[in-house]
Amino acid sequence: MLFTLPYVNWNELNLNDINASLMIQHISQELKRRCMVKTVTLPHNLLVILYHGPITKQLKLHQLFNSAHPLWHLLPTDAQSFFSNTKPLITFKYKRPLGRHVCNYTDLIKLTEDQLLSIINGNCNCHRYQSFWKGDIKHVVTGDLNFINNFDLKSLLAKGAKFRTLTTFKTEDVISSIFKSLHFYTAKVALKLDLFHVEFMPWLHDVSKLLSNLVTKFENNNFISDKLIDTEGTNTISSSAAVYLKNLQRDFIIIPIDKSSNDLAFICKKHYCYHLHNELHYSGPYVNVFASQEQIVKSLGVA
Image (cartoon, rainbow, N blue to C red; front, side):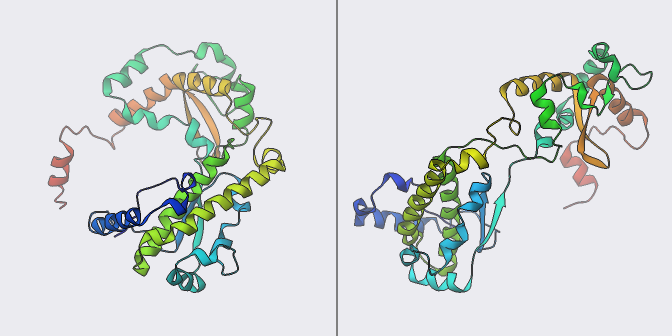
């Protein structure tokens, strides 16, 4: 089981001001929570960092766990021995790709039968886009990005569904995210080594200050604004593109193209729902079931 100290913004505290009673309180809380928290299955040497762009890699977080690092002496003695033989496996958690933001076909799962029929029996706006009709069906079915009338959105979608957009960020957001990851990781290590997590706090406090200074240094050298974020907006979703996309999703289904998943197709929602309804009700492989989920599981004999 894994337990951590309550999250505290240690940048707002002076460690010299933390008295013995507070330390005892933290230790007491840890002891009480040993049997109250959920089991974590992540390996103890896996350090997961939210990716904020190249700046995340430029900070060279792996150096924090080398004995030559200037903050090494702040680590508990047992942790120093541990990190001398076992380095953390640093992995990055990336933002969702563009396709996950724009594709809306999964929203249809939430529709009831009546809502689906309402779309099928309603009107569509395909008469405005005759050049993107597919054959004689008089509905939009296209992968042509010229269908998009918003330049920002068209430029972004041209990068493909697997593209990950860049976002501007504040220094404190980057540091806070990394600190939370280190906070969680050191809690796992403390558990493995039978240490109190509070013993890592002096190291965490100074690491946070060090990383903050590094990011600020990059900013002052224009390293971030020139190289790490998109200053011309071609890699970000602008407000106008976001509004246009929302309206587009109202009338059309956006899906990845089969066997070319980096490309997107735009299909009239009425036309898509019509074929979806026919597939579910009249194609043969599917049947209506009126039993509850529990009844279905019970009928299959699944424990």
